[in-house]
Image 1: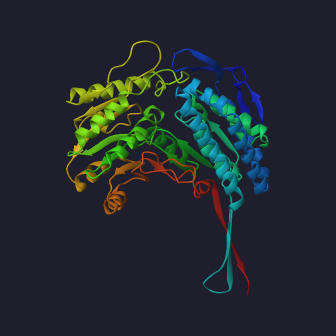
Image 2: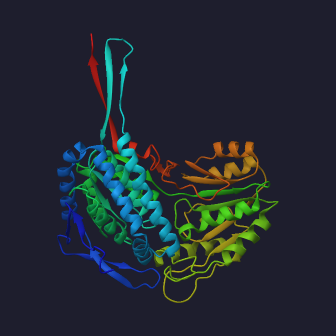
Length: 479
């Protein structure tokens, strides 16, 4: 931990919080404090804002190729330091090292992807219908941005926002989650090493999010907010952004349905369930939350899934052979415990797991529940833990209605061997993404995002950079 920055990164310099405040970073596997980092307040937010505003004009004029090469160099540095970054992430977040290494690769790919998009920002020239005027379209950066990232994918959520902002020519302030600031600070150091000019990226770690973010959103100098987190916090930030008409993109909560039809390949379905449920210990907005399984195959699916889940090894993420690390903190574990207890009280059958282990750390065992009552709280609450709740259904219309009966609409999973049904059901699901016979939808080359209360806009893919660009139309009379 001695080489990891612990100060704020403002204007290209590492600085302490103005009032000298610090906050602890805990290891969720032991409950012990790893280190203390600077805890920013309103004065620090103002300094970061000033640095971003002052750097914006020159950065916007920087050649696209220059921006591209900075991102490419940062990509290469991240790949070179995979093990170092993975250990850092596991220490502060808990995920097993194998998953952490996977996230490092995933995170790096956003920088490589947007390094290629930086040189492909286009415009256009067209003749207007009257024939006497031309329309010249150009695209320009939105301006200084506030980027707010969650704790569950601390490196990848940073690169998914920073990458397109840099490619588009925007400066930014990054506020990482207080549980996982170290990955973001390491990322800032890498970008500085890669040649990013001072003031383009500023990182403020804080436990005082309201004190830092609200003045920035209401002040009128920040022109773009990109947030990943809960729907409740997203709604609050949208209200704060309205006063200054800040452009927003929101990647919010999920309540993903996982639908297994009677004609599904159960081997594929169970494999997909393991990925969709257990990636990141279930602490993902894309995690399968509600398993709807056709009654003719529900018993067999539940048996197989419980067998696979029960074979997973729980323990500290740094230990060899561990499949499932701790949850992020005791509050997160308590939430999972309460949701499981409520389901059991309503008649759910525990096929595996369901009991909190004794000892230090925030561990919870992989759990499969069958015969879950539709009125259980975990049916309309994002579980964010390793719990698979199985319900049965009888026909297609019924399961689509139940799958859509939620205010969220991020992702859905469909398992069937019928092409017609696959297309028909996918089109009827009210979600922004569908995993068809797969439990993994995240890819830097694909547009990530949801509908309804799961958010606004898309991240990644060819459209990911659009969130950081504005159109300007120039009217040109020619006769």
